[in-house]
Amino acid sequence: MPETEMTPDQVVEAIYKFAAEQMRDGVAPAEIERKLVDQGLEVETAAIVVSNLTKAQADVIKEAGKKNMLYGALWCIGGILVTALTYGAAADGGGKYVVAWGAILFGGIQFIHGLMQSSK
Image 1 (cartoon, rainbow, N blue to C red):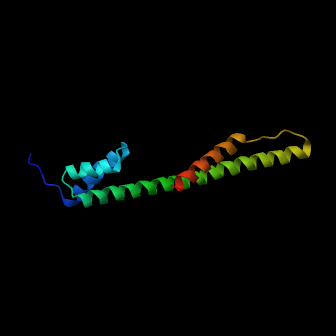
Image 2: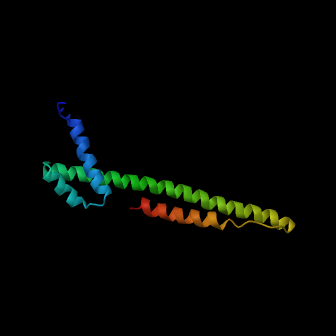
Image 3: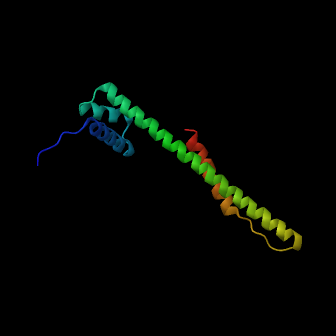
């Protein structure tokens, strides 16, 4: 079977895929650039690829942080509401109430984790 040449788009995609895999495996950006240059890329082009991937990675982490903040706040507020509502109901008749400390604690931790992610 004859080999087909890659289109320019396929070449760019392969370069980014290689660099992204290296980044995911924890290889330092300077080392990724060096490997790209060793494979025939110009120094400036390799730097642009790594820079674009680094920015994309930071954007993904910030988005994940925003989601963690939202869900953490919802869990925490939900736990506080359950606690307040059951306490209010129990206070009138001397009954029992629920302290939803798990939801409050989990939500607070998730919110703080998201805040740290989105501030990077």
